[in-house]
Amino acid sequence: MSRNDDDIIVCRCEDVTLGEIRKVIREGATTLDEVKRITRAGMGPCQGRTCRLLIAGEIARFLGRPVSEVLQSRYRPPFKPVRMGDLAEICDGETSCDGSDCGSESDEEGIGQ
Amino acid sequence: MRRSADAVVIGGGVSGASIAYNLLKQGVGNVVLCEKDTFANGSTGRCGAGVREQWGAEGNIRICKASIDIFENLQEELDYAYDIEFVQKGYLMMAYTEKEWLQFQKNVEVQHRLGVNSRVCTPDEAREIVPVLNTEGMLGATYNARDGHANPFHTTNAYLRAFERLGGEVNDFTEVIDIEKSGGKVTKVKTNRGEISTPVVVNAAGPWAAPVAAMVGVDLPVYTERHQILVTEAVGHLFDPMLMSFSLGIYCQQTPHGSLVMGIGDPNEPKGYDIGQSWQFLRKMSDIMCKLVPPLKGVRVVRQWAGLYTITPDAHPILGTVPGIEGYYQAVGFSGHGFMLAPIVGRLLSEMIVGKEPSIDISDLDLGRFERGELRVEPSVV
Image (cartoon, rainbow over all chains, first blue to last red; front, side, top):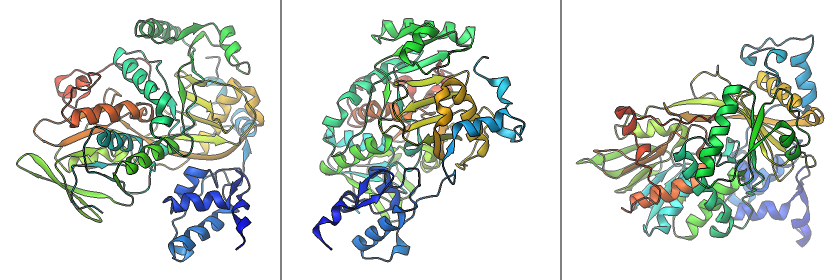
């Protein structure tokens, strides 16, 4: 590996470099959750679709274990980023709330109350 | 893993981390922290991360004020290599009912008496602080510039790294499965990775506080309840303070990173350990917030999650000793406010454990208050 590897961007959403990832791994972050919590890698709009496996590979290399043994983070919804306005309109519009814990239709619990 | 210690702290959330660090600062020589997963994995890493002095009850104002005093110098005190992202851009607490509005104004009087520089705002004044705010239906608000928020992951990590530098041992993936007593004294902690002899055990297990307390025969009057949160993509500056409304059940802050973190309380949420996410939460949160802060309509939700509140009968934490069990201490039942209290709780618990008079009297936050019928009352909780 060339000495410039540290400058490679691993998490493109949050601009986290390979050097930063390796540093926190050396400091003791040996699960994807820990790396994410310290560096923000995987917290951006793509939710780690690109960086997750790359980071798992780095952790595995550091620990000398197979990638399959590296603890993964959870996948959290939504699957793709969604505009808040679009989500709000579902509550507002013709398609009324059907969820039991939605509490109320938006107009009844608006900020004017 | 060490086989003996002067004190074992159970829980790698911000409370346990702060207590462990403060114990070493107080001169306790050998302190071991056991965390069943990784740091900040329970309630801490899932919280809204707000820190405020704007409370209604004197006791809460005092301890939160002291906690903010510590937060202001925490980055330096812990000599942390990253940034705990503590920012003081205020809390704007918005009132929508006459009753709430009267209470807020009373709160401000109490806050002033205790040296908190909060102020009462008209809706127009609130809009001067947050120009993007829709004040429709708002009767008024209170604002305190010294309130703010910090990054819960980094704050916890900062405490743990400082703890390790002072000689403490952090054990991840180390679940406490039993606590042994002999002659009314704590003697040993049993974990999935072996046993640790110790005369002092601190229960800072967050949502798992009750099962840990049960190991020494203490029945904690707490229950857990899911609270959901979401975070948006990072956007340009929208507003400074934490926005909070008890009527709407919401809070929302813009982090230094630019993303917005927001949550909502659901009065119909069942008790339990469920931390799944719901689609209904996304809709309701978006609906309320797009009306309150219209520019949010164009901001995208990136992720949602949930965490647990550990709630006591009076929504105040249970701190300190339990009569008859020497060496057992607890810092539990924070009822949704553990993060902001952690710096001061770490200091007070450690003072108690080394036999000093706690620098703030918290004797009324003991477990015995429920039997005595001396519940604490706080008018300003979500």
